[in-house]
Image (tube, rainbow, N blue to C red; front, top):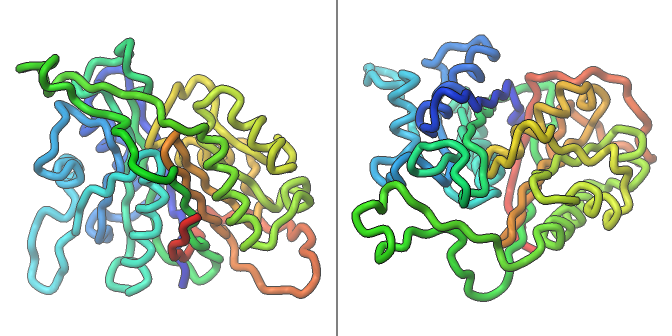
Length: 324
C-alpha cells in the first residue's frame, strides 16, 4: 500500500477574507469529492502561513477542524483526529505530504487531510502591500495498492542566517498589530533554488528530457513569479509544455500553489498518461520537490515507453527527506 492523492480542491470565494472559512470550504469540497465520511479522517495538517488576525494560538488546524466538524467527539474504541500546524513557508504542503505519509504508512490512519492558503491578517481582500491572493486549498491523501506513491523529498535553502520574510513591526503597528503584516521577497532567485531540487529529484527518478517530451513526466510549478516556468524549462532543458503552472486568474497563491498546479494539470488532461508527477514549491529562501507516481511502476532495465494507462485519482505515494 502506498500513499495516494484521493482528491483536491481550492477555494477563493469573494464573500470572505477569512482563511479559517476559506480553508474550511476547500476541505469540505475535497472530502465531498472523495465521497468518504469525516469520521474516516485521522489527521488534519494546516500549512497556511498568513491567517486571520495573525493568530498563533490555538493552532489554526484545530480551528479549521472545529469548523468542518472533524473528529470532535471522543468515543470508546476510536482514536480522536489529530490536527496540527506545519509551517514551512511556500514548501509547507510538500513537507506535510511527507508527514502524512508517515502516519498512513502505519495503517492506523486511513485518510489524512492537508489544508493550505493565505489571507491578509485584516481579512480584507486585495490589500495593496500584501503580495498574495486570498484563497485556500485542500488535499486528501489515502492508501492504495495500485499506486506508486511519493518519492523522496528534496530540499534546498539559502546558506547562513536568513532574515524574516514576514513580520509585524510592533513599534509602527502599536495596538493594530493583529491587522498588519510586513512581507518581503526572499534574498535569492527562486528559480536557482528550484533548479537545484528538481535536478536532484529528476536524477534520482532516472528521468530525462524524453520522459517530459513524451508526456510521461510532468513538473508542477508555483508559477507566481514572472517568467518562472519558461526560465525553469530552459535551464532544465525540458519542453515548456511539460512544466505546468496555473491560470493567471488564480492570482498569486503562496502555500496553496502546488494544489492549484495539480488541479490545472488534472483539468486539462495532462495527468492521464503521466507516470511521474513532480511537485515543486519555492520562494526566495527555500525550495522543495518530490515525485508522485499515480500508478504503480514495475522496474524495467530498458527505457520506458508510454503505457497508455489512465490516471487514477485514487492512487498513492511514499517519502523520506534529502537536503541539497
